[in-house]
Length: 347
Image (cartoon, rainbow, N blue to C red):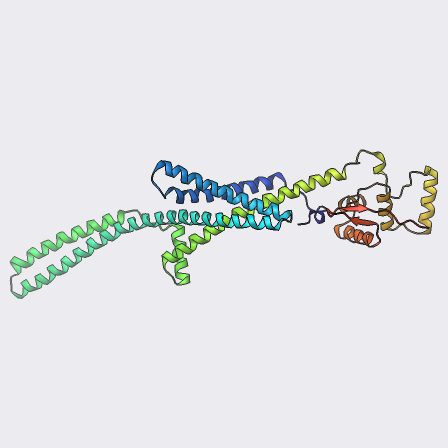
């Protein structure tokens, strides 16, 4: 990015913006590190191995984001081979980090599903007991019909009715215990997984895997974006401060504050007469004013300094410098900074 083209209208971000950027970056890096730790700590139950794998996860996460920062630095310095090396190194570590995030998010989602499955199993157990009682009552009613056909109502039917009454009381008690259980609340994530499964016509397991992979990649790219934003802002801030120091090198000298077109080697009366006669003959063009100011060292040879001194817009100062370069008044250095070549000598 060419900062010299933005120096007239872009300024370093304020304190609130930078605090927000650092907060988002820290939160994203912390979340990615925690998910990677969940994966690496589950490899071995030995405390010493867990400490080693945990340290490895932290090293991978820190190295990943530093590799992305270094990629931006080398790309800004036009070091393409170094930028490619840093990018490859970041991609390898990013794959490991995304795998750790997938394992951590998937573990948390499975825990929520298992809790919901336990609560649902309690309800299903009561439903099975109530259904078995219904079957027992149906068998007793069938036996009662047989007793009625054999005209043994007094001995068989009465006993079956008493058994059915006891079974119905037990059934009502089980129904009350089932209804007294806390309702099985489906979490937002589980509801989203079910909705995705219905929308894409797939199973809940596949929808869960797709959601976990998407969230893991999004988390990693989110953190990488803000790390790159911090690096780009630091580079621009350094360029801006260096350019500001260059513009204010001669700020304390009184002659630098004189208006463009003033001839310091003339007496004030002669200068006023010359300026009056010049205004009567022909108006002084902007190109001539800027050329005189640059030739007398009243303003630094940069777009920002000229735009600030003559109150010009970005388009106007760009067109002015293009015109001066065409006329051979201004040239470009190897570092893309402008230099004043001087007005052409007239015979």
